[in-house]
Length: 314
Image (tube, rainbow, N blue to C red; front, top):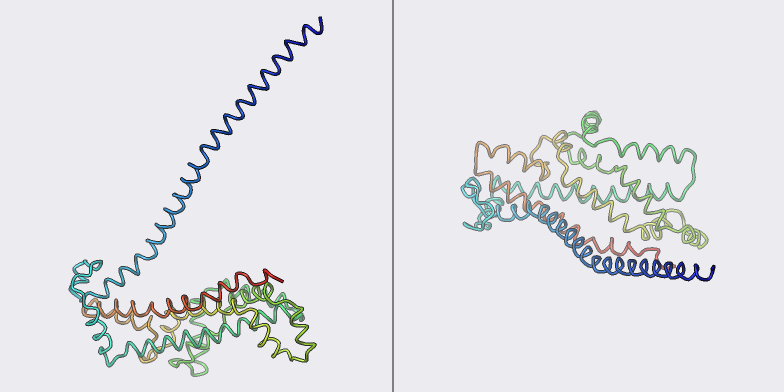
């Protein structure tokens, strides 16, 4: 009797197992067929979002490029996105001749403020970050906490106190009034310490000290070379910030010959409401003002690419 009962039970169990196996295979086949479709849809969606973001970011530059070829009538007519009435050469000549070429004087001022200021700030930031990483001294982490606190303070909130300090020592309306404040960048110090922690091994520094190198020589010949991607990163951040800086020069400067581009173009744009001939000058000057930023990022990006693989091979 037991044998008779067991036979049908085993047959039913085998049928159930076969049915489950068939269902599993069917679902796996359906999933395998749906995966390529879902992957294609996800890639299409991601690429579509990236294309939209790229168009959104490049549209102001395209508008600036086409608008710089128009005269005042073409800009006020609202057809700035076409190349009809192309007159870029005329706009450039008028820009160079206006007010004895003061625009290019502003251009040199901006290069001085941004180039020299960013270079000195990067060196100070990397040196401070290197010191925070390599040396142990009393109150080190508390001092670094003050640096992080400085990151939270907006630069516009410091413009008026810096003006009062500059007026006390007679630096208002001079080049130093803009250069000295940009030498300090708390975020650059923080970023430099992070880069030093990742790129500067203690063994290399100890080997240099054993060979008789002093601390300054170790920093200049070894530490700074190893953390060069961080140096370039801080430089580009600071260069962009100083090049676009507006509020600090507005507070510190009253002589137009000391203006950077941002403040000079703002003054022209304020006059454009009464004199529409200033509109082509402002637009063409804004187009030329983008060129140094593009050159800086394109020429220095190889240092970022070199830093991506730093430390990957021992």
